Structure formats: C-alpha cells, structure tokens
Image 1 (cartoon, rainbow, N blue to C red):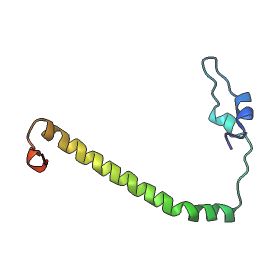
Image 2 (tube, helix red, strand yellow):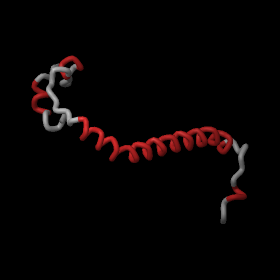
Image 3 (cartoon, rainbow, N blue to C red):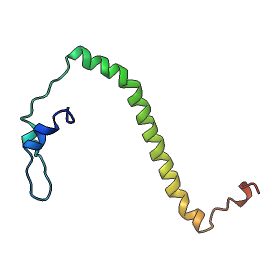
Image 4 (spheres, rainbow, N blue to C red):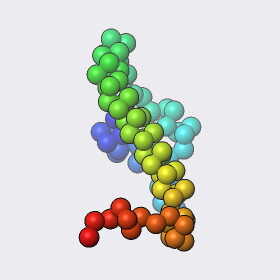
Length: 87
C-alpha cells in the first residue's frame, strides 16, 4: 500500500529539514482491506511462519543471555576452555 501510494503520501508531507507525515494525516488516507475470508486465509498461511519466527527470537534472546553471562568470566580467565579446544 505504502509503495503504491507514495506519491499521495509525499504530497501531504511537511517539514523543512525532512518530509514527514503525521499519524493524523495518515488517518485520512483511504486503504483497501481484504475481506474477512482472505484475511483468515492469510493468517492460516502465515501462522506457522510466525510461530517459527517467534521461536527463533526466543532462542536468540536466550543465547544472548548466555553470551552476556559467560563473556566476563571467559575474558577474566575464571572459565578456562583451553582443554576443550583441539590443537
């Protein structure tokens, strides 16, 4: 929608440094919404993708916590992994 209506959106933008469109202005732009059946079909088709994406986000957050918790002990030598590294 945004790409196909960029001309109309730019025409109502304001600002001297950079153009911006307020939320109130966007409220007056007409959009076409698909019917309920099509929205439900889309939801079904994308449901498993969204579940997988959320699982990846959760795993990423967990791994970041592990990294943050182990980085300082590794750098300070409190944890020694040299015995685990193959020469």
